[in-house]
Length: 154
Image (tube, rainbow, N blue to C red; front, side):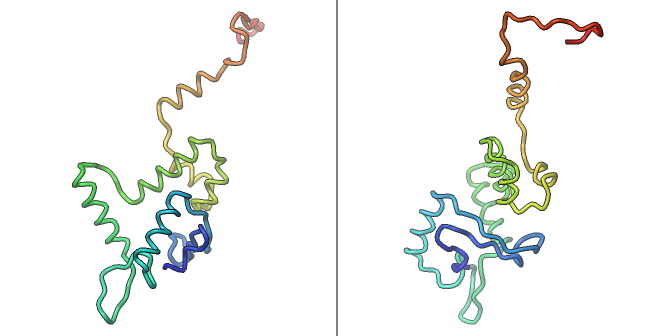
């Protein structure tokens, strides 16, 4: 609903969320918020932020199925494969993680009830694994050779 956009924040009502557990409010990305301000000013939607098809008697929002279809058709036109509305969510969460945003902050934004569930959304690239392994010993003096212990380890 148009009323769910309040001063740069989006209200996600519990009845519209997957778990239907709680209403939450999250900040809107500054660039998206600027676009929404223009959209709201120019389109002046009265009730629904993105109205669906309606006649004089019924006024309904764009359905999830309709949004999925619109995205699917757009992706087909530009020959993108494997894109879904849900993949944008995964990408956003992964980008936050890659930027070093703490997992608890990402969890609050995403609404996941547990860190374990959130972590299943986060993609890990081969390059990240290589960089993580290369961190090992990077602070040590390269001329310093670790002494061996009596058990054969370092």
